Length: 321
Ligand code: SF4
Image (cartoon, rainbow, N blue to C red; front, side, top):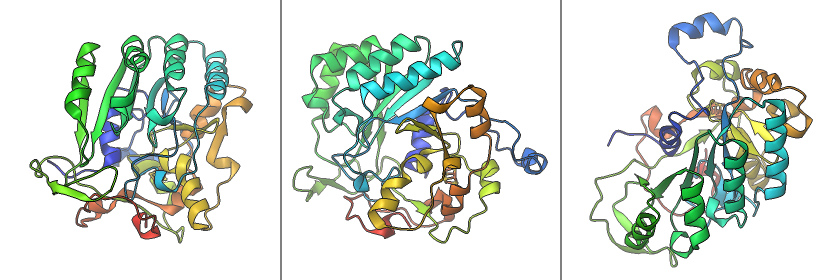
């Protein structure tokens, strides 16, 4: 399989969603637009939601810093307030939503949240991306909600021992299609003990594991990234705010855990509750952000480095730098 990273996989999942598809990063346009970095090129059409910031798997180098995150959920109450406000500001827009994590199935209000998105934005697209570890414990109300709310169902298949057969049977019962994204690995690990169980019989398939690299010196060209970063359009909703990309939304966990000096200012997000007009979001998303100074934008394999062996996080800073 062609080399790529998890977030590129997420971009694939989002294909056709209004989350990342309005970014213009064409090389010839770059030169022209570079003169006007405030020219609007993204409209808020949807967002990824870290429905639970933490995760029960904790992969090393997790793109959204889940091994470092405190236990934190998007609550149904806050979600309703924010989505109703967006609906009030833009009654004619439908916002696509992708439920990600951490691990989204940890959120006890996930089912109500899914129904709320359908109620408010009936024609929008919805998707969920799970690590699959909790699927065999989910009640019928979960499967029914996936079906009722037309959520595209994707599992990242990590090299761990999960009974996928029973998951597939359950999905079949509800006529739900499962999309798999497989992580390439030589070994299969035991979820409970975290020890190697056996060699992976399917070791040649899947996408290579890699890490997104932060630049703690803050010396990246943040204006240029407004034109060149393919992840910039992966708009994210967290803590009642809209962020430019997933790094901006979740880097707080990295900053707090390692106590590094990466400033997050009011220019780095827009609070939905404070917005007066939907154009504020479009302008915000079309403007370069100083937080990009701290991000190399691409995973290590984009720079010609070898892929990494997938594994459990030891919460070392080198997993992200
Ligand atoms: S923080 Fe990184 S991934 Fe996000 S838009 Fe900036 S350069 Fe791209």
